[in-house]
Length: 144
Image 1 (tube, helix red, strand yellow):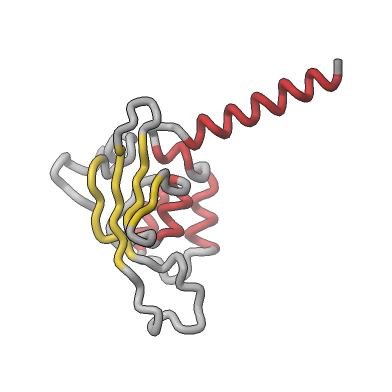
Image 2 (cartoon, rainbow, N blue to C red):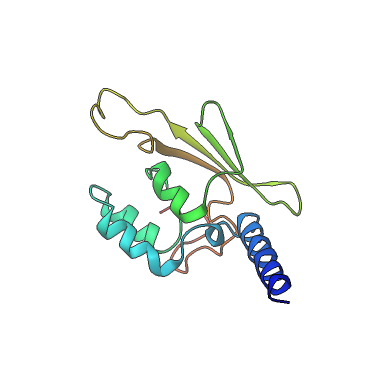
């Protein structure tokens, strides 16, 4: 009986993880809201104050690095062009929710540092809020 209970519990945990990764609301795929503050305050040295505010609100913006976006929305569903294009897909419809375009980093500038997540987000196509409602203080045609 105990083995059956553990098997059911493990199956439920796997299904819940799979659902999180397939959520059409991208912020649900990333870290919890109460964990964001730690990530930008403790780990976010050098991040622009405006980007910190946007990150804490659960949104992405041009200028963020791959690490910040990955924390918010989880890993991309599809990568192309050597990781310079990320796509997040709604698994129910098969449609792209958001496509992100990255700028390659100047490796000389980051010499001696971990530059793997230093790529800069330069363009957001599709739903810039990843299925979340836009912030109340932003108009439809405004960009952070």
